[in-house]
Length: 155
Image (cartoon, rainbow, N blue to C red; front, side):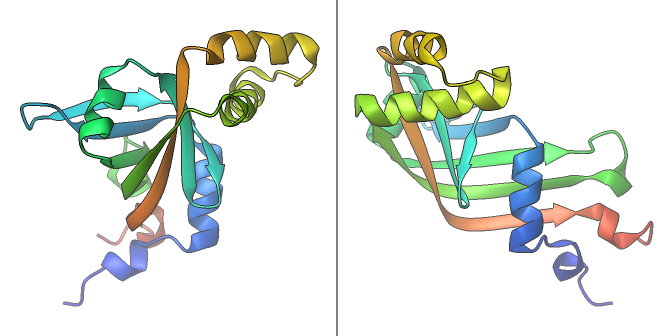
C-alpha cells in the first residue's frame, strides 16, 4: 500500500493560509543539559519565515544563543483524527536586537493579536515593551506538514 504522506502534505499556499489562521506556535530549543525546552509563542509570518518576540533574558533565548537551531510546531484539529492539521518546521534562528526591527515586529503582533491600529499610543506601548525584548526569526530548513482532512475519512 503506497504511503499517504504525500496525500496529506500541504501546498505552500495551504501552509501559508494555515499559518495565518492559527495563532500559537510551540518552540522547542535545547536546554543546557540537552533536554528539549518547549514554549508557546505568538508569531507573524514573513513568507514562510516566522517572527516572534520574547524577553531577551528568557530561557529560550539563552538556549538559542548556545545553539541557534529550533523546531517549531503549529497544530489544529486535535479533537478528531480526521481533522488533524499541522506543520513542524526545523529552523535556524536569528536573534535580532535592533530596536526598529523589534518595534516593527511588536506592532505586527499587536495588530494581529490585539487589533491595535499602530497609532501613536500603540507604538508607544509596543516601544516600552520592546525595550526588554528581542525578535526571534525562525528561518525554515525543513518543513513537514499534514492535513488529515485530505484523506476524507479513508485512513
